[in-house]
Amino acid sequence: GIQVEQSPPDLILQEGANSTLRCNFSDSVNNLQWFHQNPWGQLINLFYIPSGTKQNGRLSATTVATERYSLLYISSSQTTDSGVYFCAVVLNRDDKIIFGKGTRLHILP
Amino acid sequence: DAGVIQSPRHEVTEMGQEVTLRCKPISGHDYLFWYRQTMMRGLELLIYFNNNVPIDDSGMPEDRFSAKMPNASFSTLKIQPSEPRDSAVYFCASSDGSYPSYNEQFFGPGTRLTVL
Image 1: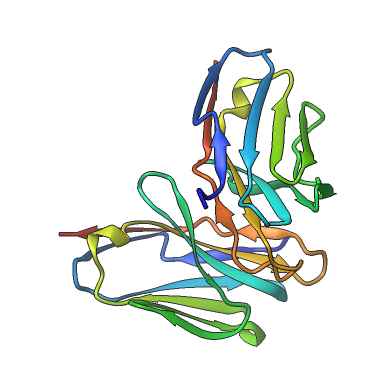
Image 2: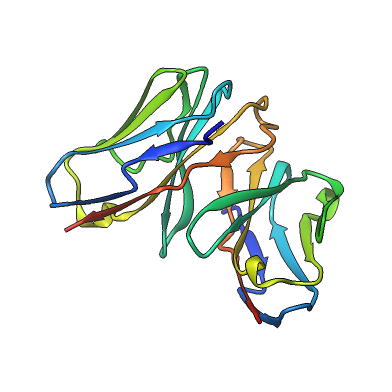
């Protein structure tokens, strides 16, 4: 079946560090989004990025659709960045939405 | 705008009881999504509506689950009868983009359902 794989599954960093989260997908997609689920469970949309690069403050994302991956960069991490980061894709062939299992990020003060 | 509103925030019920979850999307959004999140299965799309019409309900687990959207500002997800394996966090989300590029989805705070 279609796979959306995120890596690493868990990441522990010191405040101020930079990080790169990866999302690989096994089929062509027409939509890709990154979400952050904070420790209180709230899901927040970070980027809608089916292709190209976008930046929002300390966060940026790049999707290379032809190579079937997307990267989320977090610079100068803060404790409020802790939580789980999900990527979600919409498949070209049947418009199904599939979420990855997430990367759990813990930023230490 | 208050964002997507879900109620109740927590629900504890006994097996066999009917459960109704409610969602009010952001005003002006014409897409509404219901998701379920569990440790085992992660986030799953159950059903989504466009202009109050169900478009894809292939994620609904079985006939015990039903969803309605009687108007643009209200949707319900009903489980009857409920079972312990239905315990999960149920999220509602809305967006105003055109499908499939529905741009940014805004999520509600979720309803944590526990079925004893």
